[in-house]
Length: 108
Image 1 (cartoon, one colour):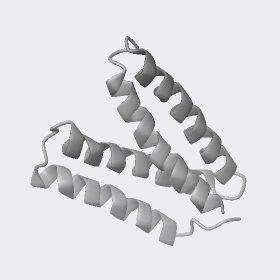
Image 2 (image 1 turned 180 degrees about the vertical axis):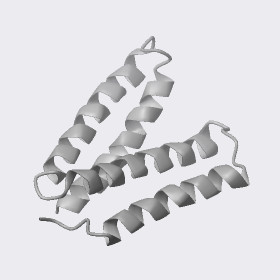
Image 3 (image 1 turned 90 degrees about the vertical axis):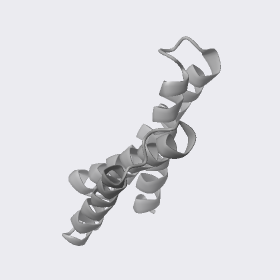
């Protein structure tokens, strides 16, 4: 269950990054509210996951999901460049998270 918390928390991290962009420096109400809600949910879920998982591994997974997810959303919905190097970088983030997990990221 701890991994589910961290993974869903990482998805909420993507949501809070996108909401932050859409808030235009907190000048738009609903994206600002969305940011506040999603950042709290994301942190709560990470905190729940950290009850059972090593902090380094859980944080890396949470951050990796957020970073890769935000980059993908940016390419699909915000016309961010979708170059080979950007896509390769996302692949490296995902690979790093997987390797970190395989290196002993289980519950303690």
